[in-house]
Length: 230
Image (cartoon, rainbow, N blue to C red; front, top):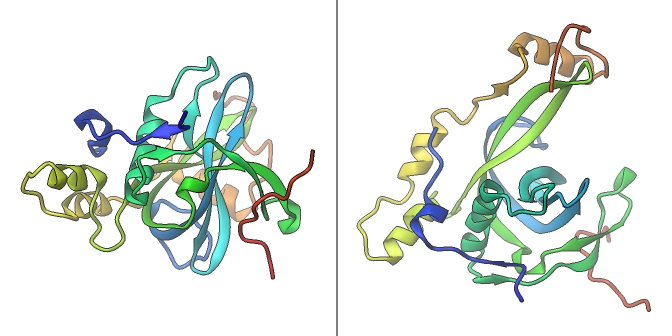
């Protein structure tokens, strides 16, 4: 049984409507990346996410929490799976095999760590759209990296455009990318936070308890290795 199967129905591929020079992805924007390999993270109860071990500007890093796969109640997360479906389509695969244990250098100071990876989606070049979201929890500012979409590197085509072309429709590759790129630096501020508060928090190296008390939130076998230092 496959871990995930590519979807080509209209609802699954319709694009959501609505950068910087740093080597690390920490701002809203469009980023050309190499997905070295995705891996599955398990949270509280039955909550699971698909996190990405990527390379951007010759720097390897992890994009955490970008795609929720299963909610706490064990039910599929529609939005997260829709984003994953875009990556699956651009990878050129139909069925994603079940995760296998592998080592990634994502521990403290680059230490190798065992994680369940999705080998079917290893080494995929895409453009990734990121949106930063900020909120408040327990009197501390929170920062979340949200993956909004993926696009084809060669022509900026969206998955919706690719599927439409495969169905014989006349489409303009890159049109949706161009429309979204105009506001790609948009940032979401929740819980009454302001851009100035977040900028100061980042400047001060993201301290905890940085918001006033009145704020609210809300049998051993060799494992494959990805990104091991030589």
